[in-house]
Length: 261
Image (tube, rainbow, N blue to C red; front, side):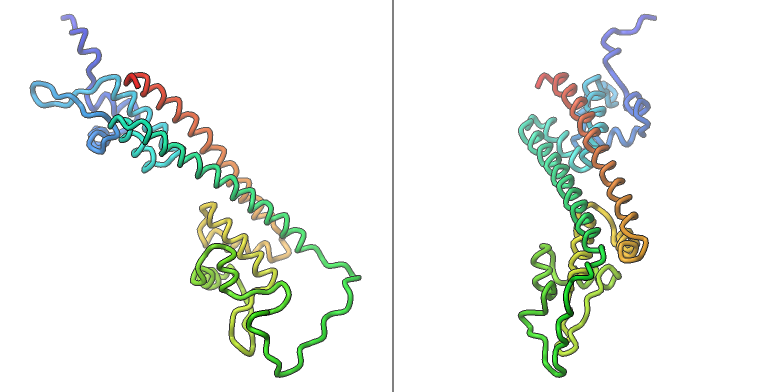
């Protein structure tokens, strides 16, 4: 018996699901969330999809690796609502985050180079050490010493709250000294360096428990090799995101053409 030519353009939920390793419920959920256009209904009430729905599903699944599930869903909802400009804005924001992450990676790499320079032993001609402070003389609150700072100024420099620095200290990432007269935390140059590295790695998506061994190794005789390996991994993930964004853009463009946008 000959098949109705129009039926070739009709797809069941299972037809969409099988092609992408999804469940039929996932396809229905995507439709309900606005990621796919609304499906037609058969006379018996069953959902029927078309190649346009298949193109929408391909576009969404291609967008997810580069932009994340939430952003990809928002883009598809905007497109399906006819708000193409909003979809482009969302894509621009995602690309801007990638660019910012690349800048952050560059900042961490610069911090690592600074670290390697500061870890170098000082020359023997550095001159005599400063005389010790007389016993009983307090450390001035406004001037903790050359190259040293308190928690408030350091937090402002990094753009974080003092509570964040205290949390990093509890995690063993920072080891500020305590002023013997005031009890205030005093961060020397090495502490500031560690705080900068922690801050940049946190921006790169690393968890505190992942950062702790890196900072410990940087401080130890092992040097900054673990940090350098983490940066190589980070760069690889950023490159993969960029490639995924290109793949997602190609599928989204195909869907927009199919919709006649």
